[in-house]
Length: 334
Image (tube, rainbow, N blue to C red; front, top):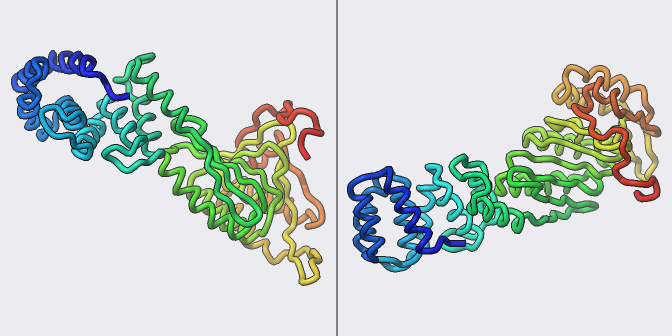
C-alpha cells in the first residue's frame, strides 16, 4: 500500500533531523504544500546520491505533486534509494513490480524486493512495513507447473528466499529440457535456497546424468520422502545437500540396463564408467563404495540404502524424522 501524505510528512521530518540545508528547506516546502519547490530542492540532492532525497523525489513523481505523474520516473528513483538499503523504497519497488506500475509486472522481482525489506535491519521488527511485506509475500507465493512428457515440475515458494521444486514423473530428455525453465524461474523469483523434491520412479540413465549435472551446477539441494531408485538415485546424489525425510525415504542402486526392441531388459556394465564419473564428482570420498554396490546388484533387483547407512556412504547428508511415517498409514500411498 502506498504511504499516505501524512505518513510521508512524518517520514520527511524524521529524516530531516539528520540532514541540513536544502533538504530541510524541502521538508518545509512540502509541509506548506509547495511541492514544486520541494522537488526543486530535493532533486539535486537525489542526483548526488542522497537516498532520502531520492525516495522523496520518487513520491512526488508517483503522486504528481509539483510535477506531472510519471510512474517510470518514480520507479527509477525508488530503485536508486532501494539499492542503497532504504526499506521504504524497497517496499515501494516491490509494490511497483507486483502491480506493474512504472516497472514491468514481475512477481519474482516483487518477491525478491519484499524479501529485502524483511532482511533489512532498518525495518524494525513488527513494524507495519514488515507486516505489509510479509502479507504481500504470502499472497505472491503461488505454485507454478511445468509439464513435460511423462511428468511435471511443480514450483512453490516456501518462504521469501526458498523455492521447493517437486519432480513428479519419469526422468526423460524432456525433463532435462524442462528443468532449464525451472532454473530460470527460480532465479527470477530470487530464491537463494533451492530444493528439489524427488517423486520419480526413475527413467533413462543418460537423461538422468544430464539432469544431474544441471542440479549440481544449479546448487540445488535434494530431498525424498519415499523410494528413489535407479535414475532417480543419480539425481538425489547430485544435490549439494541430500536429505532423507521420514521412515520410508530410501535410495536404491543397481546395475544399469538396456531395453531391446521387444522391450526385454538386459543388464549391462556398459554404463559403469559414466556412473563412476558421476559418483566421483558428486560424492568423491564414497564413490568407490557406492560403485561396488551398483556392480554387485543385478538390474532386476535393487539395493536399498537408508538411515545411518546412507549417511555413512555419503549418499545422504542428513536424515530427518527417520522414525516417522510422514505419509501416515501404508495404504495412504499407492
